[in-house]
Image (cartoon, rainbow, N blue to C red; front, side, top):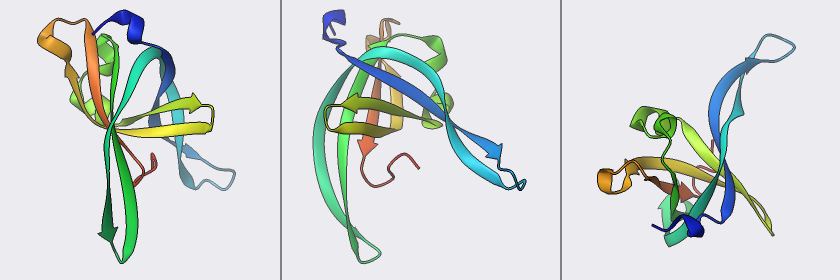
Length: 118
């Protein structure tokens, strides 16, 4: 991986619980970190679920190594948000790994579509 390919500005977000004016607990997303990344679409598929067709795209996202982003439990609780010319895209993180175990880059496997970051 070449650091010059990190050409997209992405934001890692973590789900947190907040209370509304009536004391009800709501899910909200808070920003964890904003970094430069390389986002690559890998593939897509459609599936039938509960008699409805869902489409899902898969991506890999590469960022510079940061210890706070790598633990699998921490990564699974986050999502990635980034801006494109057509709007905001939300990627659900499914896995995180240290590329070549050299602590230079982290690769995130992500999906977009079926869960929409929820």
